Length: 463
Image (cartoon, rainbow, N blue to C red; front, side, top):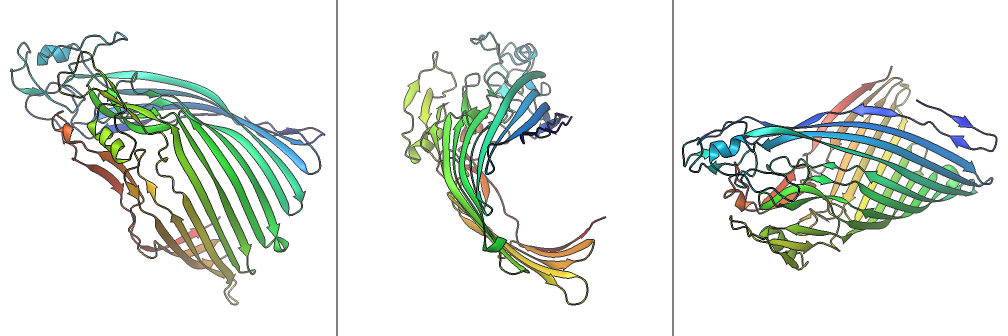
């Protein structure tokens, strides 16, 4: 639905758009699932997690002309989201009957879980006396499918005050609230689906900005600049979280607490001649966590905290009774003041384009270069491993007709092989003892290799 109206005082209501969208998706765990009781061998069948999201949103904008040179714009977006996630859980009736391993006592919420040896659909345990399977054989748990729902709704407001100091100079100030919906994490590293332990809240951001937009040299030069400050609360971060059911850490998404980001950016677009245009932009960003405390039983996480100079295990929370599998007590690790992961302090992008008539053919030819720079940045919130800085340059050239464009391109002109993204998994040596198949590495880093130099051509038609 859309509605637009305007009164005599210049107040404008922009389109309010309502959208209802459903986007199902599924995640297939490549490890063998506990789809049935299997002795001594694995059955290579997938374990599926399904996710169904329904979203309703509405947007509205109001503009007020406070004077001939000052304008106030107020806007808001309403979002209502419903999430339904299904995943594998341990069958607390069939599993102890077949394996001889009794269930754990009810937790504080009254929930009952299988024996902690069954850490997920891909882990195995030895059958004990009293089980219906042969004693001493290996088995996986019997699994069922559980479904959980998560509902959330919120309003994200924004206000912009603009002052047109002259026909070529505009100053502005803005404040806005951004919200990233909460949900249910399904990245629990092979453990069973436990929505009560893997639900995370929405992430909130207040953003403040002061800026200017200038038009110089009779319109041939445009210079934009801004100062910004962003205040995050309940920032969503991927972490290793202690799971009290299986007495070890699992991957999860948690609300980290608070983070602050500030910086400035400047960009310029210069039409040097009718044929030649140059542009460039530079951004400086300083981003750090101002409140980030996690609970962990992982010696690896404690060691990583020590290596980063964060003090390691600051407080020990005693497990009572102590776990039988030799896992350590829970440690409090403080990552406050660490830099936010994957945020470079310095970034640059530059463009050069030349376009002119190709003689008397009625066509135009063009050529151009684009180059970007990103400074080094930490791979994750522990601030141990860094991704190197890099330059990346692309080239374009081609012909333009009335309704077509032929482009020859070279991506990554200098064949730069710098790794641009990655995930530090740390040590996973305990996955052998815990029965995961295949076990994790003793020190795991997964990186996305960059594309090499790519040369090609592209032909576009418009109708």
